[in-house]
Length: 179
Picture 1 (tube, rainbow, N blue to C red):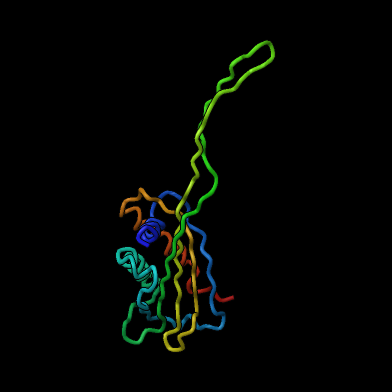
Picture 2: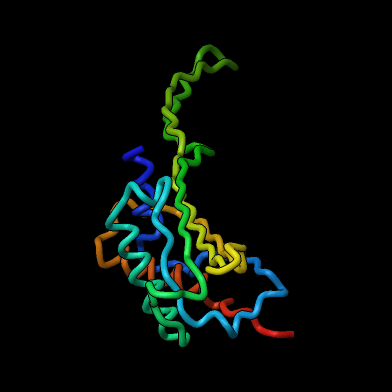
């Protein structure tokens, strides 16, 4: 569990690559103009296990929602925000190094002698799901999901930068545009 949380924390770390792909969905009947004030639901599951990661995500989400005209309000919020985190290790492919030497034997023959080693490649992925729930009806009105790779060597500053990018990508579609 601790390794999974480390992978999740690092999932959103590392700068220098494009913003991750975000999947989102929403209730087309919801009145998003009425969703002005928000609060957070208690962290549960894997999210409850990493206080620093949850704090970074919440602070970034709070700031970016406030920049969109929403306000944090523990008293009488219009919507509640839920957070889910998960992680996994992806195994696939391999890299190998080897050497082979051909030794001539007789007129037409040859014996090859060699060896090599192969190493399976692994990468860690983390998934963040943000859900907006109507505070009065308790119905889901908006959800965004992002999965991204882990950078184990990221500094705390690089982790925060990646979290900022991920949350910005997630909130790019909130509130949904009217068609």
